[in-house]
Structure formats: structure tokens, C-alpha cells
Length: 349
Image (tube, rainbow, N blue to C red):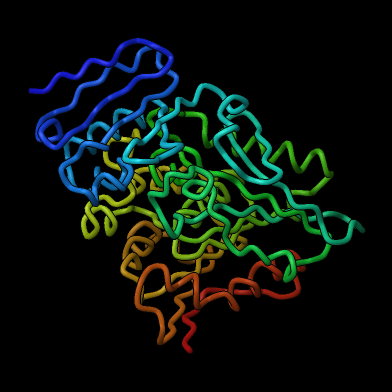
């Protein structure tokens, strides 16, 4: 067994050569504000060029190390020359320096940006966007990895008097799915409080708030809409995570980093909160996670709106969001304008 003790100093250093990762890796994180994990002397040149998250996808001992770092609030913030730097989240103020995002703000443990309306008139509205998994899911830049910019131009297609609130998802590896995790059990509460804070500051009525997200963001938008009784459009939300866990070898690093699974989480949520027709879910029987939504919501299908969207170009989970934009904007704007009644249906193209 390899027992690697890190000196208790402001910055720890840990060398991981090929022989060390063949066995369990023990680290002492007490008192550290950051830790450098060095693979610059690895035997394989390609592995020297990648950060530790990538290596953890192929090595269970490194994955266990990543899980420990994650559960201790250490997140990858930089990678260069085979050295991956993990920085400790102590508070949002001190951690904000690692999130290179224009107009970044924070409230409690939540980072966000707020886009002003194109025109400030009448009663203001609020669209809240929950980020999906990034296109480069294990990018060493935490802003790219955990604050992915979805639908950059969306403000053009919604009411002109709408604020756009975008929420970061700091936690886990690819994100915490906007749910409580083993390091931070206040994520859900902090998001709900932030929504209340923003709506109070700009005098936005609850009926003028819409939550939106796709994939991981779909998980977050759906969960928080049900929890806070908000309107929402959730696109192919990851409800149980079984597909990504079983077919992609836990590509989202959820094993060991959450106090409970998503299936249990949503089942409890539905048992203790009401659904209504302001909850809209776009999914597709052509998506590999279709059965996840069906299994959890099987007893609640009549209470919200479910749109089974079929398109010849949908071949994967990510395609659902890509090819259902027209329906997405119809539903978001209808929730804002309330011009007509919508109901569950299968949509084919």
C-alpha cells in the first residue's frame, strides 16, 4: 500500500508516477489551501499532458483520490505541464478569483451573472438558466467546466423586460447538478434564497419567473422549480443518472460524492411537493435517458406537461436540446405571456 503524506503547509505537492497509481493513494489535506498533483514524470507522454480528472476516468485509485478531494472541497482550478492544481473552497469571496467570468457575482455559496433587460418597462420578468455539462467536461478551467454558457443569445427571443440570471454549478467534478453534495449541504437552500433575493431586489413577481436548463441544467431547473413552485422548461433532465453511470462508467463522477442518488432525491421531492402544469419537460424516446424520466414520473404524468419530441437527427442525449429549440422557446414565452394552454403530447418532425 502506498501511503503518501502531504506536509501541512499552505500549498501541498503530490507526485503521481506510474508505479504510485497502481495502489491506493492516501493524502492528508488538513490545513491545505491548495494541492499540486504532479504527473510530469509519468511514463506515458500523453498522460503528462492531461489533468488528473482525465486520468481518474481510467484509474480507480486516482478516481478515489479525486472523490476525496471533491468531498473535501478541493476543485481543479489549473493544469499545466502535467501538474493539476486543486484549490480549496473556503468561501465564495476568496474562491471567486478562480472563476474567470465577466460580471461574476456571488450570494452565499452560489456564483452567478445577471444580464439586464433590453428594455426596462412595465413589470420585470426573470429567466433563470441552469448550465449543462460543458462540451469539454473535464476542462481545467473551472468557469468553463462548471459555469458553461448555454444559449448565449436567448435574450433576443424572450420578452424585452426580462432579466437573465445564470447560475454556476460549483461542486463535484462536472458539477453538483445544483443539488446538495457531500461537501456542501446548502446548495439547494442557497439557490432558493438567491432567487428570492433577486426577485425582491427587482420587484419581480413569482408568476414572472421561469427556470430553464438542459441535461444537468435540466436536472437543476426541474428540481428547483418543483421545490420552489416555479414555472420551468426542463430539457432531457438527468433524473437517475443510471445511463451515464452504467454505460459511461460514471462519467459525471457521482459515485461517492452525493449523500443520496438522484432517483431517491426526485422520488422524495415528488412525494413532498406538488406538480402543476407550469412544469414542462421536453424529452425524447430517441434519447438513451428517456426511461429515467418515465420511471420516476410514471405516477405523475397527468400533473405536469411532458413533450416526447421526435426528430430524425436525435441520436443521443445531447441532441434533444440541440433539435428542440423551437419548442423550448414556444414554451418559455408562453410561460411568460400566458397566451394559451399547453398540454402533454408527442411531437414528431
